[in-house]
Image 1 (cartoon, rainbow, N blue to C red):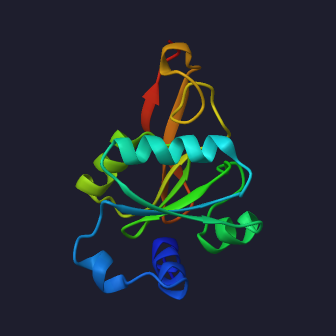
Image 2: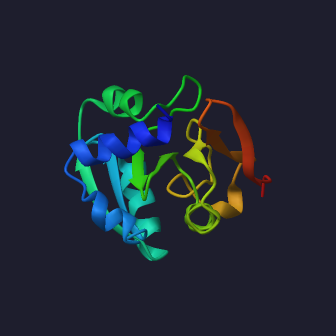
Amino acid sequence: MKKHTLAFGLMAALGFSTTALAAGAAQSIHVYKSPTCGCCDDWIDHLEDNGFEVEATNTNDMGRIKADAGLIAGLGSCHTAFVGDYVIEGHVPPADIHRLLSERPDAIGLSVPGMPWGSPGMGPASERDAYSVFLIRNDGTTEIFAHYNAA
């Protein structure tokens, strides 16, 4: 089974309308996060400021969400989101999510591993550290989808 199919199945099991997703409700994103994580809230605000309708679910079982989504070790961050049939892990910039939804590659989704300073929700972009956004392929391999240089 392809991993993005697994993620799509997880979304259906969690109560997402797969019909609505297939019909193009691609600007809706569901974020799973720790109830105490402030940077997750800041990322959500950033998504809303960039055209996404966000539903957030607080959970203390992020490990299960990540595992069920097919995320591999080394790609994790503090929050996991689902948009369309893709997984978005960590502080991915909204422009990259829009690009993903536009290009529709055969992949699991995108990840910004860790919590790089200056990524959306992690401080000002004017002071950012260099970081990459990785495209996670269905076979678990990754490639750089976007790169942001240090400010």
